[in-house]
Length: 294
Image (cartoon, rainbow, N blue to C red; front, side, top):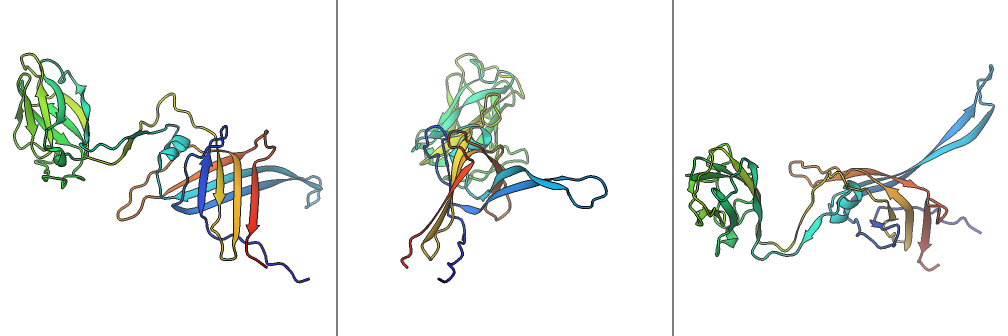
């Protein structure tokens, strides 16, 4: 009979991580540039005497590494590669404001600021940014924004100086009274006592404009844990109907590069280690199927 066509692999379709205990999928990676599995072994040679060639050769260790290049940053990737699962927030039709927090001194106090909130009817002016409130004197403050990336939302925002101040003139803080932060859909409310702030003290807060979803995560905590995971690597389905799958039983990765480059999609490249699973007595399984009729 004639020789069979060689088995070949073309492209990459997906990499799907799963929980090694329950088998449940974390999600799937589809925006992939590449996925390669390196099974690199070493040979141990016995040398001695005047022979220029080994007397014997035995096999040594095999390193099994999964290299991934991808352009997506789903929540599960932060959990698997940076050790912390993000908080997924529900849609916020009116946006949200994270509460004021003192940064230096006690600006947030009965004698200073009580709160920051969304100005009713101005939700469309909320802008995605982190803000700093700074006391100018005992009764006035200036407000600064960390970025102008969202300043064109609603009424345009504008920096008034190179220190990123957004208030043209200081805002006066009065007891139990709200004062508007112009053009940003926000208002500051004074404390319940006699206002007597200390100049240069600061407080911070952050804002999310109306949205359909959002997430936030703090990376680098002392208790963060990097889990083991399994992964199903699937090649692109060929025109012949052939499909090729690798199931890696146990995988571990530490680190997730997040790049920002002018006019380019962000791309991350990571290397994960695949290792032995005693329950399944192996490191991986490989499957191939040809669905084309002869």
